[in-house]
Length: 366
Image (cartoon, rainbow, N blue to C red; front, side, top):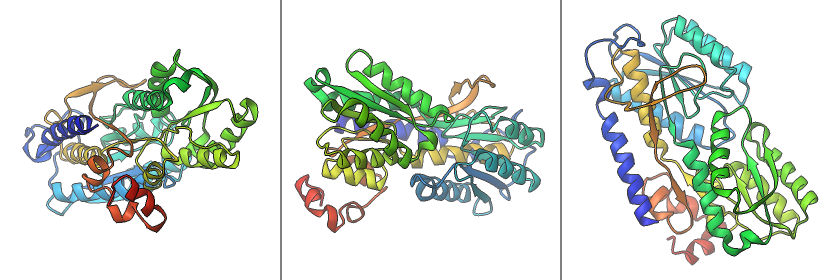
């Protein structure tokens, strides 16, 4: 695990170095997809999809706002809106951003297809759009996220490792994310690539809006259909849903089975400490947020993305989108110190509150 963490750190450093100074050091010629050249006095619109998942308000928004300020000598402004999982509301928010003449948009789409028309409106108004975390459709100028198929594979591999020989003895439940989120389909694909043929999948769900309460209801249905003695593990696509799943498992008297997750939410990390949740996928949000800010500022200033984005990604509507994919790591109780603590995502005091102190002490988290 330590080697994996070092590899991730090296990958993250490479991303950081690629991004470092890009808005300031890239060529003077305006990018063909960028707006007219501007100085530091710019407005960047930031549209995030929801606030039920802790990361968006705690990390993404704060980090992007900080980086935009840093890149523009304190003169740049971030105009923020959250869609609260409402695709129509997010489309209206894009319209508002266009009316307010922001210089660039960072969009984490609620619904990747539904946002396409609004992306085109922004583009037609001369506003470049960075797809953040989820690959939105429409004429996107740049994209940054994590390798989502690898995320699913990481979850699947961890689940198989935790199951060991039990993989042959029972069935698992797969709790995928929302069908409107293109990332969810990629997580699912990665997980199936690893799990298919190695463990029996008793029930599988696409969970509406990623909501923990919907995951809870789905899990209750799976327990009723399969019987509590048949279930040996649960693939959960993120930590929020893992919380709802674990509540259902506890209510049915099911304990000591591995449950996966993603996002390294504080509640998820605490469940990992106690053993209720086996793992999460730690995604270095500072790297992703910094790259998004670098891209948006460069595009707003009419500069090239060549020094930032070394990769190209295709969406269903747009080919060869300049992209940066940030690496991830499997987070278990064995490497909490080397990941979320080392990167300053949480402190020991935040994780090891009175309720979790004994469990923290047991694994040497002090």
